[in-house]
Image (cartoon, rainbow, N blue to C red; front, side, top):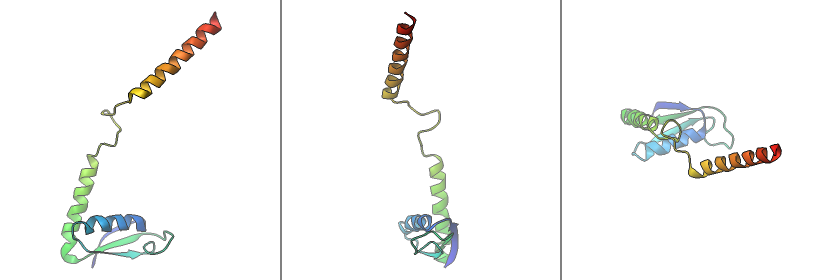
Length: 103
């Protein structure tokens, strides 16, 4: 087994191992936060040497694809109609309160 990545917690290591396992890559986890109830530090993800190139390629593909995921932020974001309705209602109430206070 050769090292593939070092991740900050056992949770991250298990997610990475599951992703690689779904493609048939066998992994082994080594480190402080693998089996205990408390995170104890970084965890190293190991793979078989013949699978190292495939594992690196899978991680790279996942990273590139995640860069193009729409996370709901940026210029393509759509504001829901209910939010616009709520803002208009608040504005109408403020205008009405101001008008009744002035008169």
